[in-house]
Figure (cartoon, rainbow, N blue to C red):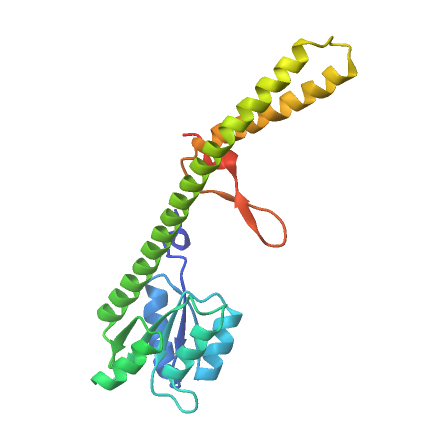
Length: 227
């Protein structure tokens, strides 16, 4: 495995109006295996977070123009960037400043002057927290899929059995050469297929989706069943 394969696949946007601070922080982050890009102002932060892959924003609070707190509020309003984690970098750790930072959507903060170990630990913790939240959301989706599948199968099972039984009775009274027999055989095969689908729904063991139309996704039954 190469060094690049060992690196976490996370991209961090470093936001500070001091170019030297940006270079120092980027050096630390890249040394830890993170991909980085930067912004020198709150406005540039919003632009770059939308333009580049951004998993986490390391945001200076005190910047001329749009402050870090206001930039964070804007990021949380934009659909493309609202999921990005924001960790503030600040020398002001008074209660009012921190309250405003968290109310704006920040997850955590790092004190200035920056301590390398503290910064990396807080970033790692924030990213792990987000991944855990994603896994929990997927588990909830899976639980909903199982509940829906069980309900659908329960509601369809009896009608399918009735249709299958009725078709078979009708076919018993017809010769195979009869055109109606041929049509009933097609119906029987489709009902049998529906029965197979309901059985597969009951065997779902994981949550997998496939692209459908208009950007929508549907459950991939084949990939969601089996060992």
